[in-house]
Image (cartoon, rainbow, N blue to C red; front, side, top):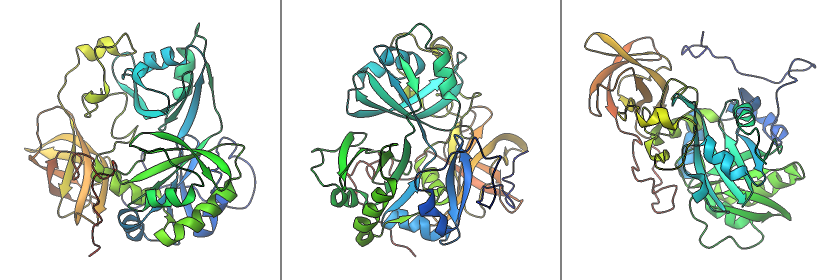
Length: 394
């Protein structure tokens, strides 16, 4: 039974005492967030702030769209190191990993043998034989270990934590925070090692918002408090503040960025959810290849615009008097001024532009339009730095 019924949900709070949180991990910036009144979800057994008592959802959304926002994420980087690291990852992922050069990131999607989706995430190639995979929620570690038998590769948890700074001012903050020179160009999905107040930190031109942005990777040897104080100081003139996953969720829906375990899962193939461009069908063998060769290439996942309600997660999608799918994500967009969501159809029998009804947060079924994702910035020019689009808050 899911708790996201539109009325209540279950989040984690910090209370006095000890015990029964042994398997949970706090982000290195946990104490920075604590005074803001955070409420956490559990993601990869890590705590990730959904919202804060100190700020409103709408204020945080506009912070992201107009200035710069920082989220300490629950992404879980795994390290793959050794002569067979590339070969293993090429076996696990649907993309041709051999084409990924050191100093670059790639989007990594893994499937089960039957073509169902297991997990997604960002793959960083740090050197020829060393990768980090910042995975979404899921048990990819055990899957990778099981398929590495007989291969010369070490799979480990490097105890790295990911944070991201996103928004129109994000790269200005990086330029001001870095004591040295950034790579020129520091393009989309590039990796760099920057000097943040005397500490070398891995950063990538990636994010979960489709806004201009970058992510930084805090390692065990770093002084996390010093990194934050430095970023806070240089970011203040640009409006940098911490925000939560709830506000980011609105923007990622608008951007058509999917969430593992809800928008896609083991019952969906990459083609079902629009991931076909991440499948290199002509490369060598990989897990799920045979199944994907014969899988339907038709799309079952769409965005949805709902003028009169906010789509509710797991609610019914109906058309012609019958249930045809479900809502996998929902929110109200302050920018589009309507309910927005992602819906997954049981069959590929509708196209963008079709009118359906979706279950909404207030318990009603509301008329809605299926739309292609992303909802706007179709060519992703904003995160690539090719388009400056700072909307006015009305």
